[in-house]
Image (cartoon, rainbow, N blue to C red; front, side, top):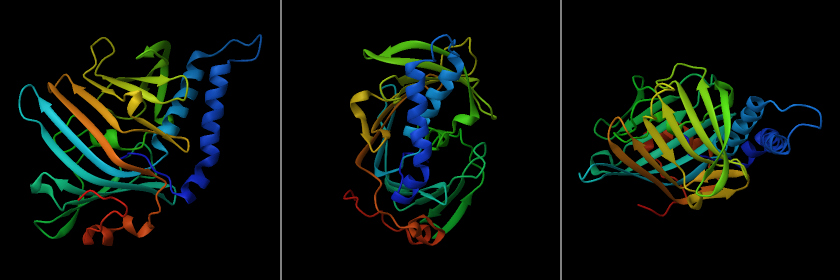
Length: 286
């Protein structure tokens, strides 16, 4: 479940990657030396690396609210506290569910795999059983709590698991972007994805998923510029709007009480903390 974060030790460890990301973006924008033709797909791949670095290599703590609506039906709301941290180079995510009432008190722990093509390890504490269970049946593309978001949407994405196939100029709300099309290099339920990436700072402003290139996107996500928080090289969207054409549903995710690089102890991201349903420090929402 990826929503961004990097503790001081993780930030120091990953700083060369982030510096390389900014350098790659700068080179892509400046263009090649005189007399050398640019390779559009190489530039697109570097831009994708920069975008993923700023979006997915930062972690956050915050209160996440997810509201899903289908037609005129009443929206289904969910609220949870989330914290994430890089522990020994792998992203660990811890969450406590607040609502709806039937999931209140449920806790979740996700541990990123060493292999970026494989799913994270997932554990959940079930209050009704007073036990921790390992989640073995869920797939990254499964719906997250019945919303238009999938587990894949919350996990860190790695540029090496995608290959850029096209890059064209574009704009979002008047802001210059590059529309980068990529294909997954792993088993995925979609054939290709389009990323709207801001030229100014490599922020991801939109994503569209396709079953086939000749069909309309089956899912689109928007991350409005006004709701993107830029802190310490991180680009964290605090509002994500999702429309799923297959399900005919509309989902909005918002993050409040956002903190980057919060002081969190490694022991929060353990089996024992999950079993004890430890609170995430620093969050006032209850």
